[in-house]
Length: 565
Image 1 (cartoon, rainbow, N blue to C red):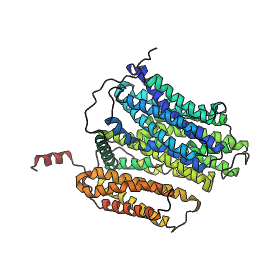
Image 2: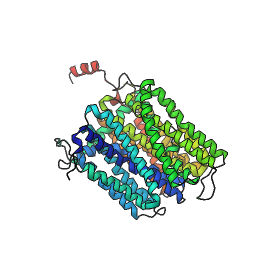
Image 3: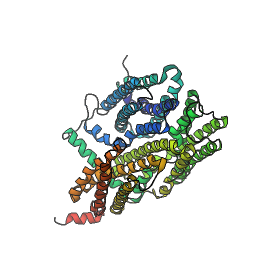
Image 4: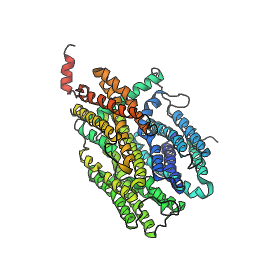
């Protein structure tokens, strides 16, 4: 039997992208719900689980870097995008099957490493699928297709999370890996293999790696210019890096607590399933309301509502004195606590769904149309970074200060983005408002100061006690942001400050290497020297005029062109 090419018809295209996005959602649901639940049942601590879930989202924060390689390296025989989708799905299956040989929780570190690789292929697949959608979807079906695609991702998360938990008594955790791999393989065989992309002439480019590197540099320069070019876009940068509302009830904290209060796998599966369904419905409602009542106004309300169920659950936990993590069977939770978990989680699903239906649109409002794909992709990547670090610090905080205080901090930090939200306004001059150079210098100064603040912290000038790992996470974000600034700054500066730009580019990998300080504390001198070097480079760039970011008025540009060189 010959399977049809789904890209040939409207219904077929919608069907194909629906199933392709299911393969993106299944691994996320499997890790964040099914595996996290089983790890907690085996008395793995919340900090380790939080780091595990956080690492799973990390590759999605850097998926923009895969785009140039997917554009440059293409196969006419396999299809320019289909070849990448086929290859990444095969690797998704291979990495999942490789996990079956690991013993949990003893080999949790190895599992985290393998799934980090797995999700890197997932992020590559996402870029290739989106590129295929851009090339094949007709203009009049893109709106519906996007809804269908996100719906597929939600169903995939429910299938990988709730579905596996329902089957857990029959197949176990290793069978869960086989089930998820089988679902992805089925989409590969029945959906991807029969696809036939419209033939496109693949442009002859320079040597592959050099061309890909040039594309990355171009992307970095465009994103840098766009982020600092207008006040609204710069505010959007801060908004994307902050937690989009309280996040605890959508991450590992919720599954950790559900296990501790005695909920069975079936109960957790039903809770997760209903949360996904309610959230999906709320996404549609949130988008419709934001179009009628205004995006910033409605998003402000949605983000504030996300903290309400978090504060409610905090109060109930405090009332029943359920503070620190408990080992399996150590305590028996009263029925009121289980009821509170259901109420808080489902109310949170409503608020989170409303927010998701509106948040992406707010970034579109401040995106420069000339570089829309570049800027919007970067915004989405940074939001994934916020999810990753939130999962990490919450796991640490649970063990250090307990559930109620963690929920309190999460509820408060989730409201910080409301301070920035009113500043996210479309600019009358999206190509730049003339303030980009000043914003760049201020950002460089702030990052330089934060790098230097790390020194007295590292030397023990003040004590952070049990929450020290949270401060370490904060400084890691500072080092990553500083590295990105220096690397992207090199691409923007170009010939105007070539030496300083290249020095910054060489320092950027060292700042990224600061992430390894937790595993090699014996190199204390190195972990003290790198922030100093980074701060010096940032301070030097803060002294530049950044004239390359100044906007030239069209009339002035014309006069300049008319003058002799």
